[in-house]
Image (cartoon, rainbow, N blue to C red; front, side, top):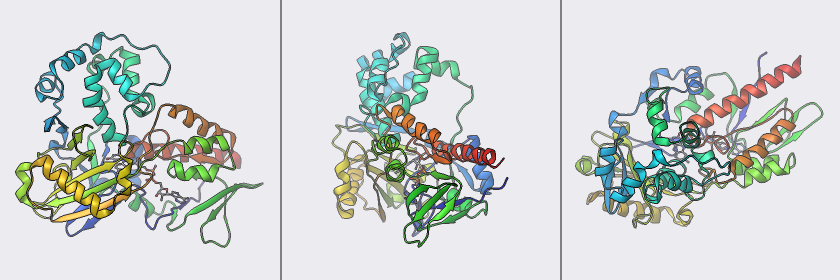
Length: 428
Ligand SMILES: Cc1cc2nc3c(=O)[nH]c(=O)nc-3n(C[C@H](O)[C@H](O)[C@H](O)COP(=O)(O)OP(=O)(O)OC[C@H]3O[C@@H](n4cnc5c(N)ncnc54)[C@H](O)[C@@H]3O)c2cc1C
């Protein structure tokens, strides 16, 4: 059975959060800068878009990750000795962390915050200085509010299976390793762009969906500015959760309330390009996460030209600063010049720079990153309940079952396959 698929995109171009800006010889990612390779669903999409030859692995140096604490950049070395000498934890904090294999597993089924989980297993210092910055890195989120089971399900799984994360990591070493950090030569937007041009389905941009309605035979979809709705046999809502809520309100109020309850704070990305004179000041590596309470508002920096060399003019150094998120929502109210000045000052302080950037770009993203707060699993269950009860409806996107690019892509494919199977069965 062949399906006639039409994608309706509200914006003027495809890609959603995956948007790549190229200007004056610099390449800046507005949203995701990479994904973990080796995932079957993404491989299928890469093959379908004929982008195999454009896949680029991150530079080996990108394995080096840093945390800013007590006024210094400190490398997070993945060994007990490396961690001990990093200065991130005090001797007492290190000792408490080393006791993790001896902490009994929790048998509680109750949802727990990321911070509470880390504190229980590793102690409060590690929760504050390691887990809270990691939560900023993935969700721009607040570790005390996010659910460990929904946001970091592997941690719960390791505890459940091995009784300890440290023991679990050792037991699983070498088994089914995740792929390395990966992107595309022309940036992350290449994948949606090439897919949309593959001919496998049609795409209409500037097509903001205002409403979806069930009819006796299927669905109608109303697009802003169109004189008549589009008829469809099935509909997949693949928007941010805040955009999905009003579309399903009249179909299932509980699902709409659940979608609305998933906060998506604003994130501002500031990209700063420097000439080669700053090379010695900015380490080779992936980037730095900044613990709260350090007197710096930025959540972290990504050292883009170190991760993917060639994303600036010869010798240029590109730093991407992330600001805002759940821990600093006021960032959204600063204007471009204020947020640019803030990022420039903080970057100068962080690396001891005196040079001015030669390139700047401010990207403001409202409703940027869904927060999987405590109770998220209940919200997802409410959405799944609606989908199960309403024939021909699918709901997907990074607001539900995984916030990363690869998770969103995989969830979209699984949702499409389910709807395809339902259509095939209904046609029989
Ligand atoms: C700053 C930032 C950095 C990130 N970094 C990383 C990273 O390094 N690695 C990683 O794995 N992930 C990262 N992510 C997450 C990643 O971007 C997402 O997982 C992924 O892009 C989500 O894809 P999606 O299709 O679910 O949603 P989106 O990309 O948000 O797409 C939803 C689309 O729906 C459209 N839409 C909304 N309402 C309507 C409507 N009514 N009608 C028509 N269209 C509509 C929107 O215009 C949008 O294009 C980052 C996200 C942000 C914001």
